[in-house]
Length: 220
Image 1 (tube, rainbow, N blue to C red):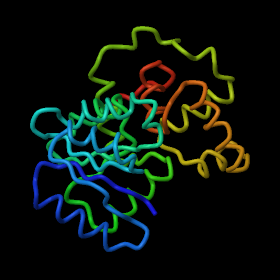
Image 2 (tube, rainbow, N blue to C red; image 1 turned 90 degrees about the horizontal axis):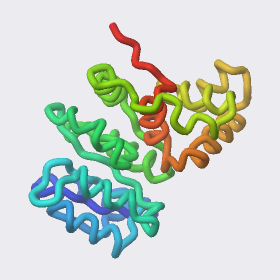
Image 3 (cartoon, helix red, strand yellow; image 1 turned 120 degrees about the horizontal axis):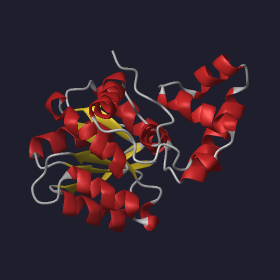
Image 4 (cartoon, rainbow, N blue to C red; image 1 turned 120 degrees about the vertical axis):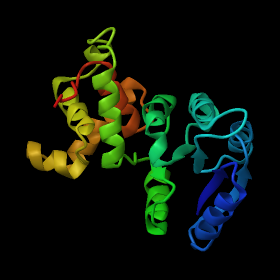
């Protein structure tokens, strides 16, 4: 059973998400929050598998709430799935840096919501192409990394190669096909890189790859 907390200041939105999730046999909504502070408190008290986190909420916003959840060692197994609108793409990079594991557009199909919760609950990152493009554009527009080599010395050459491919958006299966190795071997290398860099998931690995300068955005 995947346990979910919904954090959104709009009652109608919460009700819609709850109805959809509770209709599934393997999903259970265990709490609702109307602001970021309540979302953090519920995460600490209920220890859900996933928090559906709206970005714009009164008081503590979803970005800071995500940061507090991700920074709490006792909540290491709690994943945050950000709820966003097309007009909020500027928040994508900030949320990734804060520790979000994925993003979901509020006008997504119900099936996409269910899939997103499942993906994030099992510890994977949900980075849709629109999110990846936004992430890259943030780096293109921003200043170069302060220390391009930071942290790279802890990775082997193979692990650096893996991280670069993850940052380019490749799945473990696609990495395995490109490097002519098994998917399990690819997954092992990626997991080792995450452990060495203290990344919660693949989303954090993508952030590190760009911030460290290991991957350079392709300018058009």
